[in-house]
Amino acid sequence: MTHRIYAMSVASVYVHYVAKAEKKGRTKAEVDQVILWLTGFSQGQLERHLADKTDFQTFFAKAPALNANRDKITGTICGVRIEEIEDPLMREIRYLDKLVDEIAKGRPMEKILRA
Image 1 (cartoon, rainbow, N blue to C red):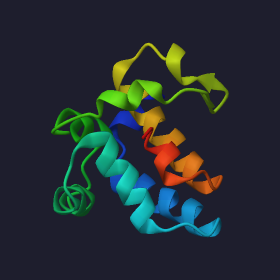
Image 2: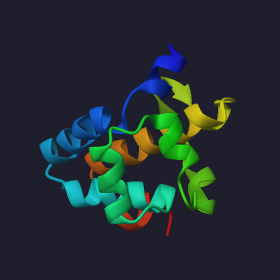
Image 3: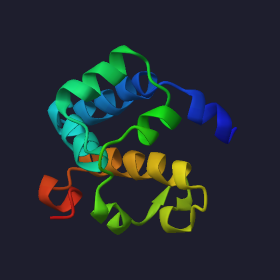
Image 4: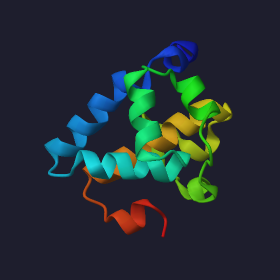
């Protein structure tokens, strides 16, 4: 199953991230902000990856600057403790999932971005 997630396009999941945030009164801009914070992509680079339907493996491999504070993202996602995920790529994907969850739960952006 893990390898299927790696091959999924970020764009195919991104629409669900945005829908989840908007359902809770948050915005697409906030979802983009956490993605840019996590990966170091510019808005234009993110939009290109979404348009190109880049898979997760390539998306994280091409991330220009994975945020040094991402290891401060802790807790559980899908019943699994993020800090216990051994596979580096799966951990990056789950960091992103957790950030979007925090947006949907109404957490302030400065806390989500570990400021």
